[in-house]
Amino acid sequence: MKRFSCDELVELVTAYLEGGLDEPTGGRFEEHLGDCEGCRRYLGQFRTTVVTLGEPQPGGLPGETRERLLSAFRDRGRS
Image 1 (cartoon, one colour):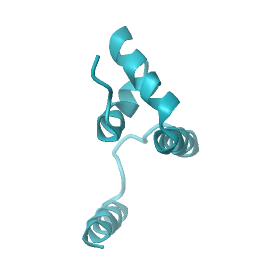
Image 2: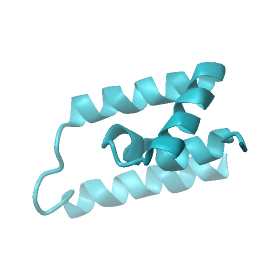
Image 3: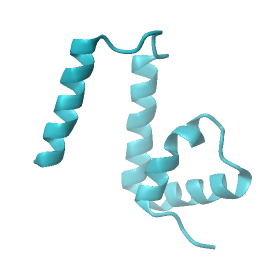
């Protein structure tokens, strides 16, 4: 059975936390976590973010906040 890469795990983290992975995929996900400290740390940070931010509010982010956030992500990608 092919093992997950870290990039594949990152793509599935939301589905994992929501219980949306089928049994074989969830098993491979957890197997990767067992062997990868970086991905365990990433999952922990992701869980902390979800708990801290809570549920998204109706209407999304206000325009100015959304633009600042998108700009920060764009700038980070250039470094």
